[in-house]
Image (cartoon, rainbow, N blue to C red; front, side, top):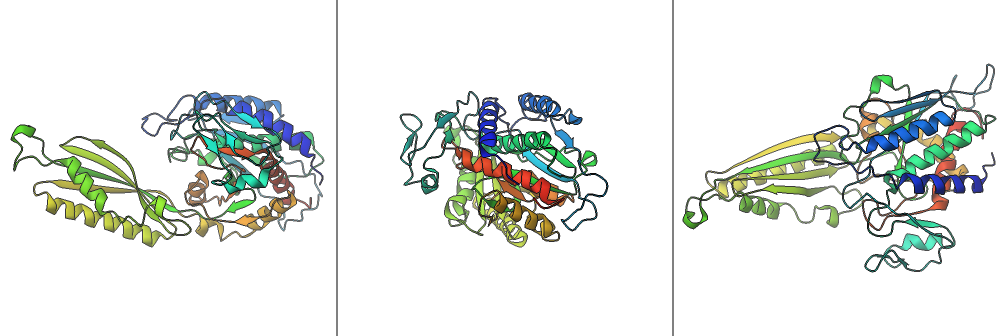
Length: 424
């Protein structure tokens, strides 16, 4: 199947640069759902565009979940070569929101056409240097998209959104490409970890799904961390600091000592590969009470459980150091390693590998040092590996994405649609 690259490039550039200008920053401290109302703006725009593509079944619910379906174009008697009597409903998923780690409003995308392989200066203080980011060297001559350095770019995950939309547009304009039913799912609040908390599972028909939320070109991620969020609250005793001797129990000092006891070699900045970690993520409070949030991540759930026990042990030690104090530890499971659910359905990944290869990329089986909405969806009974978007340096002002990788991601999705039914 010959997919014209120019068509995809032009559509992806126009669509992606338009989507990133829409502020969809989520807010992990918000008590509403979605955590920011601005996410509805992108959801409503996508609903209108999908309807314009000719999709009849397109809805955005009160929680900003968008679900749409491209119905099968197979006719009675069509040969199915994927090994199924009839093709299963396949889902494509991406998330609407962007991280609040750095500013995400007033994004001004910059196209570096015919990139020369040298340093890209975003502004006076922020540069993308191939010496620091050697992946840039692979895209000399390509168009590289960045922000202007004052914000993130939003490729996580508007590159995924754009790639799904471009692939869908192509499929609706090429009815000769056979495909079964394809379900489109755009979710809010993935970056807050709440993306699946109100997910309308009963409305979903997909047997298998793919999140388009990865990074490096060609990467396929069927494995993620097990994730826990641990709330640690330090209860001290406040008193006038002029008369504090023998009376004040400073919760801030308790938190300081607790943090100093966490294993320094088991942090995100000190680990890679398959090593898990503790990550102090946020701290607030005063002398009488301090709240600390610690993320625990590991591919092995037994190791994650061990780390929770270490936190409990350190909490007990702090209580002994500060008589009369109390430390409360409340762990909460966020998501599980999706590998156990995906391994039982090997065809999901094998067909994806074929789709990537046919798109002109080298399939790279990797694991996510993190998670996606697909981690939780897999646990809900719909195995969901992750597909590359082509983006790099997510959650930072140094985000960038090469257009050629976005084209290959869109081609992968088009190939997937065909491969689940007949040979492309």
